[in-house]
Length: 406
Image (cartoon, rainbow, N blue to C red; front, side, top):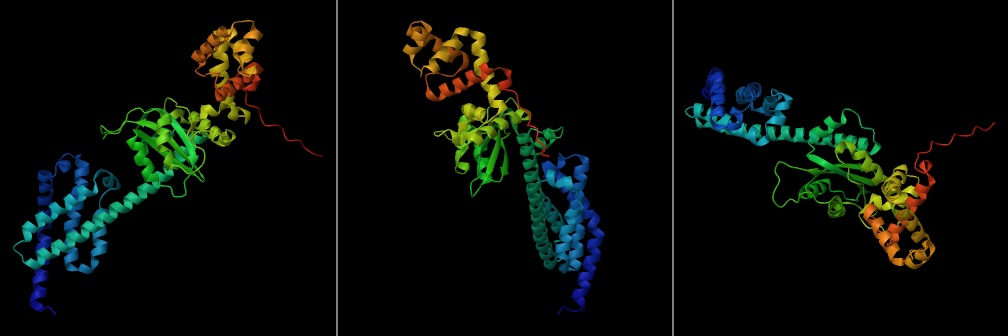
């Protein structure tokens, strides 16, 4: 049990510490400017806030030295003096540097006051470092939960097409690095979903990603990214189908559908509509690849009543052929109706088979689809049927009025 002399020494030490606390704070701020470049480059208001944290640490140590049992509360109070935005601008590493400088300055002033005071400083600095780590961990956890909710809201807005004026600011708040083209990928959620691994894979592929989990459905909004720390091994501008193929292991079993590329993130709802429409009908194509592009499911989507698919078929196939040459439309009709037989088509049209072959090649050059393949023949025939039906075929029909029974 300490005697009266030890107690007197502690009382005198506390009086001395309180007397020099202002000088310690001033010396600490000066040392911070001399040794930490990031501190000297801060705006004055933020530098002042960091200085307040250092000063609070010194005051807190004096209180702790008087009553060591108050450690948890006093350590937490140090960071309570800092404005909330300081946590976003000062990293945990920088905070630990701040603690180290403060301890060094204090040690220099007390080195002649006995080993017990120096040990007290070291013990207290350890508690403060743990308190700092706890503060940053809690902030990161809260930020992570907020980001997850915000990301889910953004993805839902894209899927529903109900974008508002706040969507760009919400996307910016998520740290979106995407620029240029965007595509939406829809699949199933795996039983053990590793969202961090999916993000790492996306970064390696040179794309940014927004992730939405809607029950059993997993939605990725992919955008070409230009990260600030790009490395040489990062590919640039991979085709979206190739990106989808490399992301495929991150999805659960089932179909995986990639929407068409759109110019920017604000247009992503168009890609999302196509991807969702394709995902709903992908099982109707027995040998659909994984992943499959939504535009390769145009016939199934059109049969399911998807107005976007109908419009796409007419605008990308029927109208370009009609505008180019009536002979191309007639030849394509005849070729498909005759079971893709060159000879039967030539007999019906009274032309040489080579003429039919030439016209089919022109069809492929005009619209990009080859009528000689069975799958593409189905796509082309669906487009011809819809185009010949006129505008009513692609118009969205209003819901039928419900009959009232009397």
